[in-house]
Length: 256
Image (tube, rainbow, N blue to C red; front, side, top):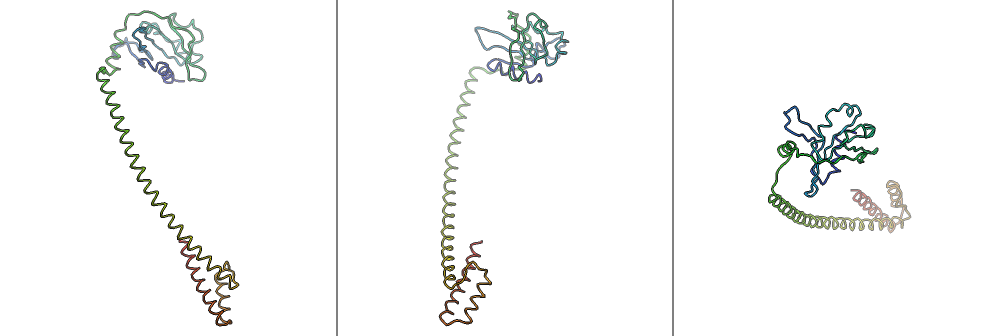
């Protein structure tokens, strides 16, 4: 568990508040400034409250800290935040300090000791640091304009996306139709070729031959019939040989 991990847990805890990590109480170049690991201002006019957090990830660092009392005047509530085992007893903390501990799973913070809520003088130097170094001022009027512009752009982009979606959908429909028609034409051509091959195969069977036999075997049998048969049979054999050649050509065409 690192300090950065704990800062992220605090950020989640104060998602609706003003959250300032690494918050100083004055300019960086002065030697006497203090730096809170996180400083929070609750966004409420009726119950204004600020919270300071000091993160400790090792017990030795916690025990050696001599500046903790300097953080307390910078916020209404001050907490030490740490993984299990860093702080062992609440009595080890300043009286005013609270204690937040990371759970064993590392994804949540639990209160081990509540902070003593105090009324304090406004930490002017800390406010100045936040205003000058950590914020970007936006007027309410400008914020309204920015929001209006945001929604205007969002709507325009949505319209553009819708238009492009229709164009793409239409183009895809045309391409799919062309592809379907091409596939259907090819299927029809192959179907006709298969029917022709089946007819040729049947004619070869009518001669008492096996159309599945090797080509050389069929030619040899046909030559045998051709050399020793009557004129009618000879004509049938010649027709069968012609059909066989057509079958050979058709098979070659089908393999392409």
